[in-house]
Image (cartoon, helix red, strand yellow):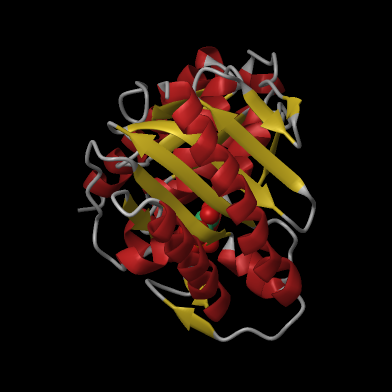
Length: 284
Ligand code: LIP
């Protein structure tokens, strides 16, 4: 079998599995959930996150016993390692707070990395029936139709998504507030959805031009699948400090329709952070 046909077999298998696992979201969205808090009240887990993760890992393990797994609810607070082995990277429910509230922007996320490179990405919101998929080198799709990032290359015309929830963390608060203020001043508009993987896919489909996500608990499972989907749709996902391609294991990410928009966002955040550092130094 060629590499491509092996990937196709993995892809077909995991697509069926994603749909099956996502039924748990559909069936439980209106039910009362048992909600546990992880790092803070912005970082939640329910019994359904654990149930979906178990379904996905059990089925993948019995099909591919030599594959590795990095999954949100099994990883706990440990920073996982990514090796060269085929590794399934899973967020059983991304946007758990949305899920808890019945806000219908929540999804199952599965990526496969081989030799540390993401080769399959799937992000599925069963509530709005949005299935984003990509295989390396073969384009990005929404419900089977090809998608591409927007042509906006002027930041003042960009619709930008952002996660302000991390204002709750004292050490991040001023940076997040000031980044938000700076982006609002320059961009066309700002939105916040509370679900990293789906928002990155909105960049991939051209509905959003840039998205910044960074904070404790934002890990490889939030960005692995969608970073391939954005790349295959013609966009970029960069590190907000270097402006270079993001290291999926250290996601302080900017997803953007193109490099021009990504560069503009990197610059705004860098200048804002410098101002906050100066303010903090002058008050000490
Ligand atoms: C969530 C992210 C979201 C962020 C939340 C949380 P989870 O992931 O997708 O963007 O604002 O704090 O980290 O925990 O629902 O998988």
